[in-house]
Amino acid sequence: MNNKNNPSQRHAQQPSPSLKKINLSAWPLYLILTMTLVISTVSYQFLTLQQSLTAGLLFICIAFWATSLVPAYWPALGLFAFATATQLAPTQVIFSGFQSSTFWLLFSGMVFGAAINHTGINSRATRLLMLILGNSYQGTIIKIALFAMGLAFLIPSGVSRVVLLIPIVVSLADHFGYGPDSNGRKGMLLAAAFGTFLPAFSILPANAPNMLLSGMTEALYDAPLSYGEYLLLHFPILGFGKLIMTIGVILWLFPDKAPNQAIQASIEKSTMTKVETRLLMVLCACFAFWFTDSLHHISAGWIGLIAALVCLWPSLGLMTKNSIDKDIQYGTLLFAAGIIGLSAIIAYSGLGRILVTYLTDIIPFSANAPLLNLSLLTFISTCVAVVTNLAGVPAIMTPMAEHLANITGLSNHAVLMTQVLAFSNVLLPYQAPPLITAIALGNLSIGAVTKVCLATFVLTSLILLPLNFLWWYALGMF
Image (cartoon, rainbow, N blue to C red; front, side):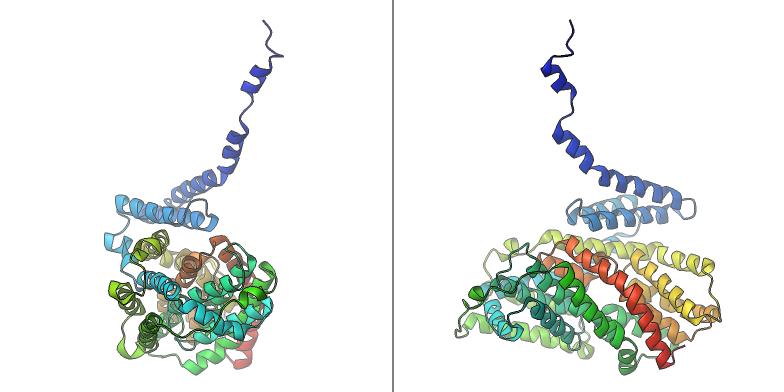
């Protein structure tokens, strides 16, 4: 019997549309898994088994975090499981993220944000900022970014500044009428995060890589960096110039209408309550210890943790009883611990140093081409920043500065300063703990932050770096 014209049989032979959709949507996952296998296999021809497995682990984690195919905590948990099972590094290295100051700063930031919302200080701060920011969306973005950059001169930790800024900007976006997925909300949060982070690389004590470079330079070469000279060398282009560029990128990628005037007017004056006063005292004490860390040398993370414990004390009424369960994003904390642990595993494996050694052997430096040499050194440091993280650049490149100065003909100081050009140019969010903190506290999508990173990376490479070399030439650096 001929069943060619039987409708039910024709229907059975056709694949389900939902099955097609599943198969099509899974191709990035298959591509990432295939590339991971290829990278591990090929690198094993030149590296040890431990190093080749680490290279594959680095790729798959970055790929998952960059594409958001799975929740951000999943690669972190997978990293812990894989690295522990294969013994890629000692357990204290693998789980070093949970011991880091950054992890506990992020935790304390979540606690502060919950306490600020519970007590109502967010509304009070919002009302004050509304009077300053005005009625224009563009003006709001510009003023938030300028204020955020100004904080970099006062608070030495990038994560600490983000912890302070983001909860207030979240409340401000709510009162301006910008919804959770609106461009206006994203733009305001990105202006705060990038405004206090990117220009700060030109201010010596404002970010961790700067301080690591300064400390290692003094320890290895007995040449302490001058605050004023460092500022003159980097701030005009990499500081203020990058801030202007970042504002333009945010307004271009996330345009929106002006704030809602009716919602703005809904906030009324009120006297400060006892609970608000208590929280303000705790926060002011915390910020005071952050400002003076050069005197007491207590890490910002442990200061934040102590302040968070005070906020969580039940009888003070600064938070609800179930805040520790309801207001803390543990998935984001695992994400942060995973990134820090991955960096530690890479440092333990020696991949960064192998990369630098390989690149310096094959890159054609020329003693008579200082501009070319500066560009190539910046490229090498940028590669290190991508493979490790931003703080990995001074850790790996500073001990090699004298050798690089000999083969390039540049001064040791010029070679050291090219690191700033690299670690101030962020390609992806995973490289920078302050951006991870902003993603967590502001509920920002990784995609939105990645867009700004990629745009600023390209524009910095094409426009700001050539301008910076011109500025250095005018200052007599080469």
